[in-house]
Structures are given as C-alpha cells and as structure tokens.
Length: 123
Image (cartoon, rainbow, N blue to C red; front, side, top):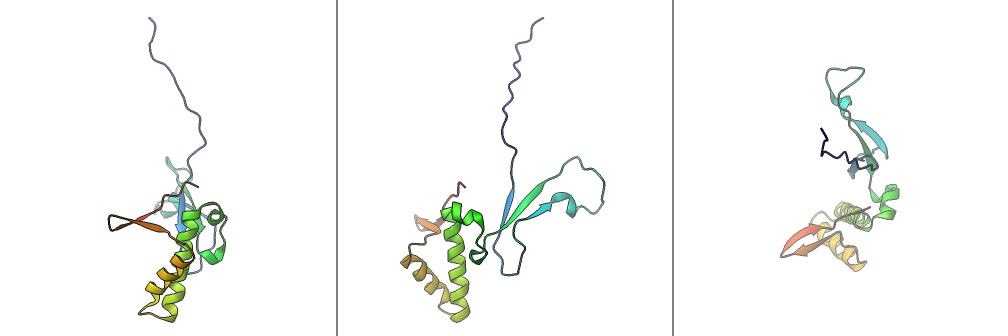
C-alpha cells in the first residue's frame, strides 16, 4: 500500500527572542534571561527552555540595533528627550520634548485617524 503523505520540512534559522530594556535603572546590556531561572523547582533538564536576549536600547548606551533600526532609534531618542526635558521642566517638559524631536525629524510614531501608531521595526 502506498502512502500519499509527503514529508516536507522547511529548514530555517532558529527563532530568536528579545526584550528591549529602556528603564532608568542601570542594566547590563546584552544579557540573557532563561525561563527556567524563574522556576521554583530546579532540575538539571527541562522539557521546555526559552532564552531571551535583553538589549538595552537607552540612547546613551549606543546599542548596535539602534544603528540598524531607524524606528527603534527614533523611539530611543524620543524617550531620551522626554526624560531630559522633564528633568528640567516637569510641567512643560513633555511638550518641549515633542517639539524638539519634531524639529530634528524624529518621529517614533505617526497619527492615523487621531490615534498614535508606532512604526514597525523590521531589523
């Protein structure tokens, strides 16, 4: 008896998972987190393991991905401008940061029908 089933396998590079960190607290750039580190019961081997690379995207950390991905770089510049301006002027700092970014053509998001939409990053 012949089988009509066909075994088709697609070979691709394995998946990669990232977390983009942009907090204020110091964080070591390019570290690796593992899902199993959060398990309360430790074993030598797990049926499933997930490793996630943490990338510090704060503008002053000059992460390599910011050089390759314009939307992410613009987001990082915007967050940096907001923090800097709010530190000087809590009441009007956010508006000043927006004006500053618009003046240098930094637009991390766009407005569609009055709703802000972040640009998609294909880096």
